[in-house]
Amino acid sequence: MISATCVAPVNIALIKYWGKRNEDLILPVNDSISMTLNTNEMCAKTTISASEKFERNRMWLNGDEVDFEENVRLMRCLKGVQNLVLANGISKVPLSWKLHIASRNNFPTAAGLASSAAGYACLVFTLARLYGLPHNEELTTIARQGSGSACRSLYGGFVHWHRGVLENGSDSVAVPVVPAQHWPNMHVLILVVNDARKKTSSTLGMQRAVTTSTLLQQRVTDVVPHRTKKLIDAINTRNFTEFAEITMRESNQFHAIALDTFPPCIYMNDVSHAIVNFVHSYNEAAGTILTAYTFDAGPNACLYVLEEHVPKLLASINEAFPNDIAQSVEYLQGIPMTTPSPVSGNDQGSGDSSKKCTNENVKINHSTIDTYPKNLLKYIIHTKIGDGPRQMTDEDSLLSDGLPIAN
Ligand SMILES: Nc1ncnc2c1ncn2[C@@H]1O[C@H](COP(=O)(O)OP(=O)(O)OP(=O)(O)O)[C@@H](O)[C@H]1O
Ligand SMILES: C[C@@](O)(CCOP(=O)(O)OP(=O)(O)O)CC(=O)O
Image (cartoon, rainbow, N blue to C red; front, side):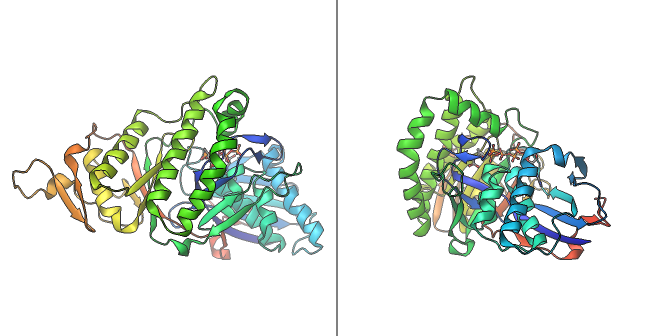
C-alpha cells in the first residue's frame, strides 16, 4: 500500500468569482483574487492510500462515507490527475490500483467558510503527491473542476485566478501574486454568525445570477478588470486603505448581484449588516481605514486587519457585540490572544462619556459606534495570511490499513 497525507488552506476572495461561462469545466465569467489563510487555524486534511487489494474507490468525508464514484466533481479531479500522470509518463503508483480517501475539515463544512475550496485543493494536491507529480499550474485547472474557488487554494499568499478565454479551459489557471511573506502582518478575524449548512449553494446561486441578473454583465465587463488591476497594485505596495476599500466594495457588489438575481439569493442576514455598519463606524471613529469586511455566500464576516491593530479591533467588537462567553476559549479561536476587555472597562472614570482607547497611535472614539444586543456572534476565528498546501508525515495519516481512523 502506498499513501500520502496533505493539508490545504482555505482562501477568501477579495475580487469575487460569481458566475460560470462553462458549467462542466467550471470556467468563470471573470477573474478573481483571493488571500490564502493559514492552515494552523483552518484546513482540510486528506489521506489517500492506493493498494492492489482495494476493490473500488472509496471516500470518507469527516468520518462519513460518501459515494465517490457517483460524485462527478470528485471523479473529474481523479481523472484529471490520472490523465496528467499518463501525459507525464511516470508514476509512483500503478493507475489501476483503487484508492481509499479520508478527508477532514477542522472547521464547519458547507457553511460559507470555503470548505469546498480547501477540500478539492487538498484532494488534487494529495493525488499529485501520491502519484509523484510536480506542483504546477496544471494542477489548478484540475482543482478548478472540483470547485472553482479550489484552484486558488493551491498557492499561498495572494492568488489571481485568470478567467481564460480558451474553450477547453486550459488557460483558466490560478497563479500566485505574492507569497504570504510579502505581507506577513495581514491578519483576519472571521466573525461566525451561523455555521449551519447554507440554503442556496454557491453553484446554484451563481447559475441563477448568470441567467437573471442584469447587473452581472456590467460587473464582468466594466468593474472587475479595473478593480483587479487596482487591487494587485494595492497588494504589491502593501497599501491597506486601498486594499480595504476595494475589498468592501467588491463584497457589496457581489451581494447586490445576489439580490438582483431572480428569485433573489439572500446570503447576509441582519447580523451581517450590523457588522458592515460596525466596520464603517469603527473606521470613521479611527479617522482612517483600519479594517475591511468581506462576505461570501453566507452570513459570516471575514475582517481583514493588520496584526498591530487586532487588539483594539477585538476590544471594539466585544464592546459593540457583547457576548456572555467572550472570555472563553470557545469564543475566540485560532491565534491565541487574551480577549481584551470591552473598551468601556478602560474608561478611567474621567467622567468623559466618549470612551477612548489608545493603541498603536490611533484613538477610537466609541461614542459613535452602536452597541448591539448580546450574543449575536457565535464565535470568532483569529487567523492570518498563510502558505499553500503541504505534505505531512505518515503519523498524520487519517487511514490505517486503508480504513478511517476514528476521530
Ligand atoms: N475536505 C473535503 N474534501 C472533499 N470535498 C469536500 C471537502 N470539504 C467539503 N467538500 C465538498 O464541498 C461541499 C461544500 O461546498 P459548498 O460550496 O456548499 O460550501 P463551502 O465551500 O463551505 O462554502 P463557500 O464555497 O460558499 O465558501 C461539500 O458538500 C463537499 O462535497
Ligand atoms: C462567493 C464565493 O465564495 C463563491 C465560491 O464558489 P464555489 O467555488 O464554491 O462554487 P463552485 O465553483 O460552483 O463550486 C466567491 C469566491 O470564492 O470567489
